[in-house]
Image 1: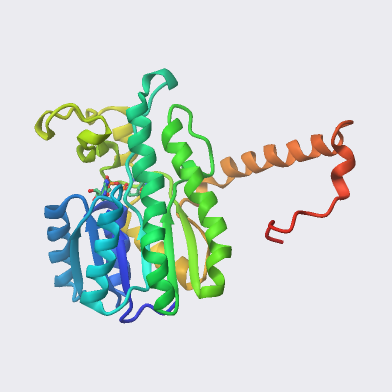
Image 2 (image 1 turned 45 degrees about the vertical axis):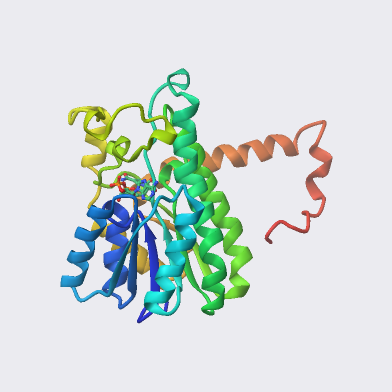
Length: 293
Ligand SMILES: NC(=O)c1ccc[n+]([C@@H]2O[C@H](COP(=O)([O-])OP(=O)(O)OC[C@H]3O[C@@H](n4cnc5c(N)ncnc54)[C@H](O)[C@@H]3O)[C@@H](O)[C@H]2O)c1
């Protein structure tokens, strides 16, 4: 992968996984654009990158707003001349809990940031990356995009969608020299469990920022996240995987058996359909033209 002097826009780059990827790519010689709803955090992050010799631009943006995306692309290209890569990373943890515990506003928040934020990032950046002659896009999914997570319906829905879309976009954009990958980490030690801090009034935030109730440190979600792997491992792994042109980037090989069990269940469902008195005769039909072979 050609990183040197190319430019990458990282959404949600102020901290966590986004910042770790921005740092890893900056150390490969990329110009880094940190786009984040938290401008102050992004400025602090940029200062850290500058001390490492990385050329960096900070843009305040909310991935939910299309106008923020288009202005980010304009600012990035006027600062660095072109845009070659996108890390579609900004995301929120949603509101874990039983189905009936989630309001439509909870769902809308998670879908707007985690799914539509990614879609809008693609719509704003792909034309410019095409004009630059190609590059790469990493959409941040999750292990929850490979395994349904009980009591995490809204998060699972958005991450499964991001993984599926990335598979489709990888095929669509290959002819333009754009490599598309989905990153699927399990737990990484970040502040994802405190995502409510980034929830806007438009998405059901009813109290002021100072009054937001965050989960206690000893809650199960706080503990599994804080016991997650170091985010810098994720940054380095992304560089390694891009160099190897991987389309699905795994950071937790220990989850293999759980994902294999899901694939096995899917395969068994095909086996049963092949034996079905109703649809079994379709077994030797050719695949439809749009299916990647
Ligand atoms: N931490 C994990 O265990 C884990 C595991 C799998 C996937 N992920 C995914 O990684 C991505 C990054 O999460 P993280 O763990 O670093 O979380 P984090 O909360 O530590 O960081 C999220 C960053 O995104 C920014 N952000 C949030 N909403 C935004 C918006 N509307 N517009 C712009 N910026 C916004 C925040 O300000 C913050 O800088 C997310 O997509 C998340 O779903 C995280």
